[in-house]
Structures are given as structure tokens and as C-alpha cells.
Length: 84
Image (cartoon, rainbow, N blue to C red; front, side):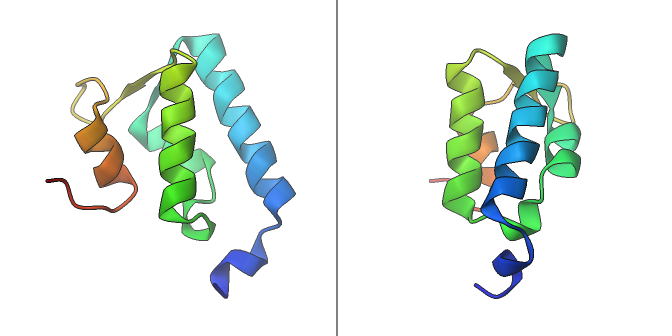
């Protein structure tokens, strides 16, 4: 993927670590913070979904723009996939 080459994998990993630290410090993350803090345009959908799952496993709450809590359907919406 051509656009992906503009960011090194280490840059993406560093951004993920910063977002995780913020989430641990705050106790939660909101959707806007995640989208603004990560180079989402340079991440594959599977990579983004795995990251969101990692947050869930670390018990970092993800809040959506409407204030509701994160669910799998929302995770798939964030990464640009259709839900069943």
C-alpha cells in the first residue's frame, strides 16, 4: 500500500504506546482522541481493529462521540467495516 510507506512501523508503534499511556492515565479514551492521535490513514483496518481490541483487553474504556461505551459494532465502524 503506497500511503502506508510514508510512516515507519516504529512511528505507528510509538503513537500506539502514547495513546495507551494516555488511556491508562485517564482511565478511558474517546473515539476522537484515538482518531486524532494515531496515523489512521497509514494503518490497515486489521491493525486498527487489533489495537482497539488491545485497549479492550487492557481494560481501557473507549467512549464514542455520543458518550456511549465502546462495543464490537462501534469498533468495526471505527475501522471502516460493515457490521452484520
